[in-house]
Length: 206
Image 1 (cartoon, rainbow, N blue to C red):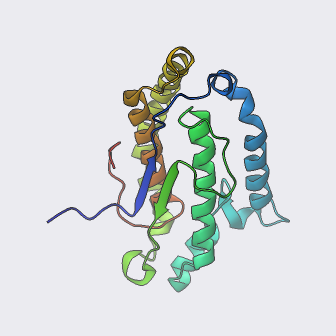
Image 2 (image 1 turned 90 degrees about the vertical axis):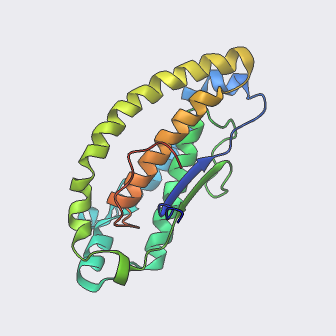
């Protein structure tokens, strides 16, 4: 029997072409406009009126989802869709910042980033009280991701030099950075967007 795929999948298309050296060189500056858009979107979501407490983790609809699963065993589809589309946007910006794509992040087009959440059958797949504790159960992942993030920082510096000199993103570095993004996406899907109760694997692989 083949293993059941994890309900959160993530991949980035490898750019098998010469990347733009100029925008790569200035990436820390070129990302600023879209990063401001993302920050405004997230802040507008979490700070609307006096409802800060009820809304989100970085713009995601978290607390209301916790309460509705806890008391009514429901996950409104439009809340799920919002969390998925915002997460896709976040990762498009993250992929651009980590030099994996030189196309400017779109606010709506998928581009090279493929993130999917499977819509959960809340009645049968999500424990009523699990959303209250999953953020705590994920602490080991936070620790590992902290150190992986340090590794990504130095890996992207190496990729930056490689792109400037060769125009190409080294495949080994690309796979590592993609794997860390994938790991983080699974943890977010488990602990914050609550699309599954399956504990995320400690793995960079699909």
